[in-house]
Image (cartoon, rainbow, N blue to C red; front, side, top):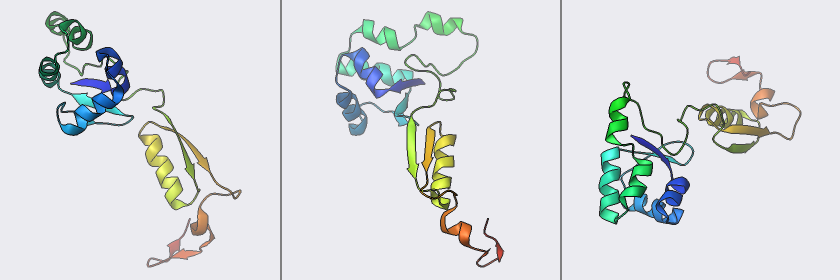
Length: 145
């Protein structure tokens, strides 16, 4: 599998990023979306697509590893020629969540677990929203916080 980003792939192929996005949307390039505007494409599928579109072999070699280099690697692993692996320490991007209620807190946690840097904005000095004002919750009468 090849881990690609639309903008970087477009730059290597010499086309606009909207062209690459349209190829993916129309199904010409079969890619699986992942987090952070990244896509996973099988190497054989990408090679087939490049030949169908008429991309030069030199450009394909920059993206696809050579067979000799693939044979030299003892451990089979995903090929990431364009970006760092998905589990990188650097954040993918930054997101601002407005509202520190239960939904805002949950959204912030989900985004942070996906690899984004999250900025949670709340107008009051405490988070929790209306839920923080409740004493008990229905139907279990558990403590709200």
